[in-house]
Image (tube, rainbow, N blue to C red; front, side, top):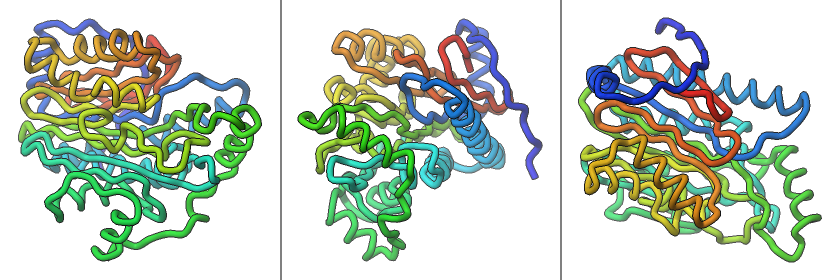
Length: 333
């Protein structure tokens, strides 16, 4: 059994040359997120926050142990996102939100920074772990993205077990849909729902990978596709720069090609991962009115967690650091 790492929060430290050198020597790193948004109030919200923090910490413990043992970044981000998809706490997989028809439509993507291969799926029904199907698209087809009935048919043909609608039903998501219908009867999809999950990793071979999964937005129009299944918008990874996973109001992330933009700022403008992430979130998204955030790790192991909402569930672990989980602004990794 791997040694248990201590869960803690600590203030963010300024990135400098010495810190970047330490990160470059760290060998591996894993960062995960569980969505960005505005906090609720009361005892129930406190319980939810504790449960989310514990879930993220478990994923980081397991992923960190795998990376330390030599696992690939691609395997680790897939397994991390699968674990979050299996939890009803997050808006992905089992805990996905309902669309305007009272149904679940899931999406996910994954990308290998070494080869620039990518896979994505959208408008899924009955798929327990969309991130794994996205990887199968990447590895077992000549395509990048499959959606809807075609994606489900591919899953069935590949022997993937499908689940019924009841698997995804959760009371708090159903209540959220009813509340959204009361307030936005003439504007389906107007109520945002945060909780998208994602993971980025650097392995001991120096390879980067990223994965993202979501159920979309409460009361969204049937057939809506967000950024989580669009390579370059919600997910991107390149060994030339960094790996990125985004969360928030997907339409805005699509419009600015947010994930790829972070990498491009590093590759073409020479920015470091933190300044590139901040520019995309606070300037490009912020100027359009987009809300959300992103996590990223560069080829030297430097980590960025940037968001323009009040909270973003996030956590990290590296070879030289314990598991750390944070929620609110000012709680650094």
